Each structure stands twice: as C-alpha cells, then as structure tokens.
Image (tube, rainbow, N blue to C red; front, side, top):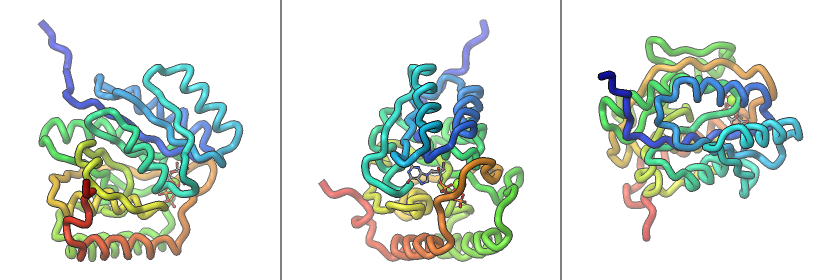
Length: 247
Ligand SMILES: Nc1nc2c(ncn2[C@@H]2O[C@H](COP(=O)(O)OP(=O)(O)OP(=O)(O)O)[C@@H](O)[C@H]2O)c(=O)[nH]1
Ligand SMILES: [Mg+2]
C-alpha cells in the first residue's frame, strides 16, 4: 500500500506585503503548489500604506483560502516590525519568512522543509551563493559588497553558513519565542540568522535564486547596509544572555 508522505512540520508562513499585487498572488500560488501538507497557515503582514489594489488582492486571497490570515501591521514603518509581529502570531512549530515581491523563490520553502526533516535542525536559511543558487537583476555594486560582507562575517562567526544578510528562511518557533528581537527595519534579516548562530542553535542552508522584483520598489536603502554591519558586530560581541528574552 502506498503511504502518503507525512511531515511533522506545521509551518506558519509569514509574508511581508507592501503594495505588491500579481507578485503576491504568484508567491502564494507557487508556495501552495509544492505543499506536502506541512503548511498550517499563511499570515500576510500588510503595511497599512499599501495600495488599495494590494489590499483588495489580500482580501481575495483571504476569501479563497481558509488557512490564510490577514494582519494589518501595527507598528510602522519597517519590515522588522512586520516580521516580528508575524513571528509572534505564528501558531505552527516552524515559521517561514517570505517576501511578497517574488524576490524570495517560493519553491525554496519546500527545500527548507526537507532540510529540517532530514537534519532536525532549528533553522534553514536560503543561500544565493551556493551552487544552484544565484542572483538575477541584482545591482552589481551591491553584489560585490554582499560577497565581501559574507566573506568577513563568515570568518567572524566561524560558520559554514553563507548569505548571512538574506532574510529568506525557516526558523523553529520555540527558538524564535526565546530570542530578544530588536530589528525594526531591514536589519531584521541578518538578525534572524546571526542571533540563532551566536546562541548555538543548529542552522542549515539550501541554495536559492534571487530574482529582482517586477513591480513596485525596494524599501531598503543603501545606507541601511550600515545597520546590518552594526547589528552583526553587536551580536558578535554580546553576552548570550542579552540575546534571550528574560522572564
Ligand atoms: N508589511 C511590511 N512589508 C514591508 C515593509 N517594508 C518592506 N516590506 C515588504 O517586505 C519585502 C522585502 O522588502 P524590500 O524593501 O523589497 O527589501 P529587500 O528585498 O530585502 O531589499 P532589496 O534587496 O533592496 O530588494 C517586500 O515584499 C516588501 O514589500 C514594511 O514596512 N511593512
Ligand atoms: Mg525586495
């Protein structure tokens, strides 16, 4: 008798949304297509400054899918707040962090889930620098800076993980609940990787391809790169206790 593949993973997928339309629809469609029963909910964390068309699409998705929840972001602005609110709402035992701009490859979520099933790790990050990964339409200056940053911080953190700045990942929920998150803007993306690493949690990586958005614009600015560096250095020298929530 054929047995259906069963996963012990109950995944909450947090999708940050800021005015995306067709990219949001396509992200959800492609995400659901590979679901082997592990998606327990999709939470759209929507910026209140989003366009009317975007809000409309969010509502249509909500009508269509029982497992989809809408959340209007409470603390604004900042993708860091959005992700923190989404992570807190998550009821699954793992949380995926995805963007609505289609720069994060929805199919890679399935590879991340498989990696957790195989290794029992606490988190998996997407790595664009691995064989099988890559960047399409990425700014050439940013690419060089990104490479240099990965090189230096991999040495400082003594890790075989690359792409420490990338926000696309899956994290174990009870680990997420123990960590003291501080990022309010895009630095949350590096924070969600380096804090688990520094605390000794078991982190893995899978290759993924980044493809520049086809609609809207990035809310990231070049100067924010310094926030990434500062956060990475702060965490590196911080006492572990300071990174955990104290009851
Ligand atoms: N809810 C919410 N979503 C946001 C906010 N800022 C950005 N986003 C969304 O989060 C995702 C990632 O944000 P981007 O600004 O594109 O940042 P990024 O992709 O890390 O940076 P780039 O590499 O410059 O594109 C996108 O889907 C954005 O629309 C925010 O303040 N609130
Ligand atoms: Mg983007």
